[in-house]
Amino acid sequence: MNYWNDFLTPLQSTLQRIISFIPRMLVALILLTVFWGIATLARNLAKRSLARFTHIPWAVRLLIVRSIYLGTLVIGILVALSAANINVTTLIASLGVAGFALGFALKDILENFIAGILLLFARPFETGDQVTLGNFEGTVTDIQIRTTTLHTYSGEQVAIPNSNVFSNPVVNHTRLGKRRYTVDFDTSLTADSALVERETLKVAREHDDIAKDPEPFLRVSGVDTGNDVLSWRLYFWGKPVKAVEVSTTSEVLASLKEKLFDAGVPTPTSTSAMIVQRPARADERAKAEGGEM
Image (tube, rainbow, N blue to C red; front, top):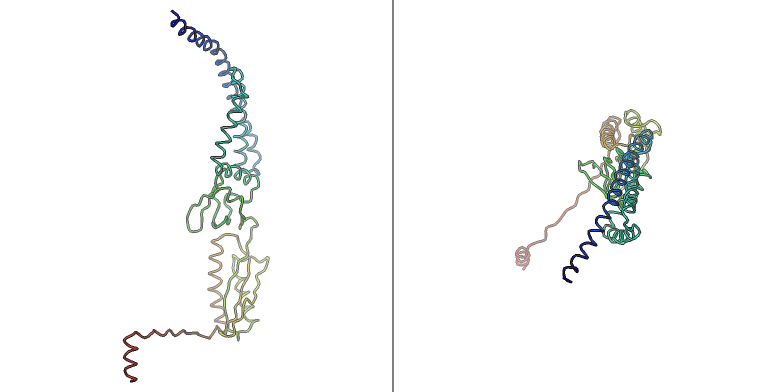
């Protein structure tokens, strides 16, 4: 009989706790449903309100909307747990310890997440900008919370962790609307400097993709008297697009070749040669020594 009582007493106590917990659980579920509806309503209102602020990047707006939604849900969960008579303080403390361990394990992911948020607010570049990020150069195609995606000029897609982007210099080639380019070429030391400058600037000013303001200018970049070389460098401004840089540089060089040749500008005339003597083989050396004897 004592064994039977020892079995029934804990069972009855457990059933009583379950029965008494059911109403609190129902209240908690109702509260959770209400807060879910509030979170959804707040998300939709925030999305419509932020849509009018077009100067704010879409990623920042999305971050704000999601933060409002998740924040409201977290509050609803805490209220529901409290209504279910669950010790929220102990639960939060347990989650804090677990969160610390999880955060240490996911350190790199959290760093990229925080860096992504800071980049969205700092806005050093936008989608469509041509930038240099570390060792990569290309067009920004996507900015996410964890990574920034570049489409390189060689047709590759590169996803760069935001922590690397945030902690290294960012070169934005398109933000200011213009970019300076250079073209190098050589003439002979006997070339007429005034003639070279006049013909070169004429080529630059007639090119449609070269800006008129600031004006292009020409400078001597080097003198090599031993090889009869006078080096020149043409500076000009154009659209900050890689395709424009490549095409403009090629067209300017081709035009300079024709213009300077037609104007009679002499080109470097010196040549250099290097004679490499093959070491004699052992049998050849022996034959030569035998002949001498």
